[in-house]
Amino acid sequence: MSSERRRTKYDIYADIIEVISMKGLCSLTRVSYGANLPVDRAKKELNFLVSHGFIRERTVGDSKKYATTKWGLEYLKTFKQMRRFFAALEEPVKIKIPEVVLPNRVTTGYKDLDNLLLGGIPENYAVILTSPSCDERDLMVKRFLEAGVKKGQITFYVTREASGVRALAEEFQRNFYLFICNPQADTMIENLPNVFKLKGVENLTDISIALSSAFRRLDTSIGGPKRVCIETVSDVLLQHHAVSTRRWLTGLLPELKSRAFTTLAVMTPQMHPPQEVHAILGLFEGEVNIYEKETERGLEKFLKIRKMLNQRYLDSKLPLG
Image (cartoon, rainbow, N blue to C red; front, side, top):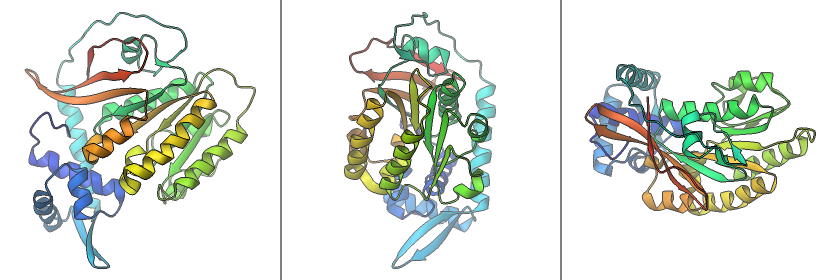
């Protein structure tokens, strides 16, 4: 959730459940960081959620860990649905953005964002999308992937979930490569030549090896821009912290650039200490940010380009909804 407004207790419950569901098992400290709460407040809310069956407590060695329950995941799903319903009742604010297309740009699949970027992301750039977990972010990732796949471009997607892209993986086996970093990957999608199933993000070398294997399989007859979406940055940062995550990205991003990939990474800053967030942001040439802000119309989401090194773009905020 955004720090620009005061969260309700229901927002906080959802944030806690989402942090734990992403990790599987969480310590109190990890929940505190991820949900942006003081440790004592996080402990109080965890005890409440445990008492109501939304979270279960486990003893691992000498420490307590927390895991989600089916009831907790149902709450999170319903909470997100209700937020969508409330947003749908609001009439979106319209702004007019001039359409200017510069050469050597890669479309994001989202016309208004492309207009802010004067045609799209500069080719071979590495851009990070910083955003709380929300439907608008998920839709932006989906549009970015579909824009590449349906144009016949080589498209990589590194993620924890296969929901929403299974059809793409099955239909576009020649140019869409899916990397699922999840121990439950076998239950998410069938085995396909363009699908790589990894146990999680614990072993970053395994992810790098899978990417290298995919590089060797690429159809050299497919020309044009290539694109990759790395949606696991927050997962990696939670597991490995800033030093190891930076080391991994410092090797990966230049490798992708050398192979003519345009990169869109995704991170949830609210899940990490500020110093770790800044350590990762500095590795990217561009940043696109989705944030929430209280307006006269209520709480609204906006999109803004925070940086795009040595490139022209429009410094406007774009209402989402």
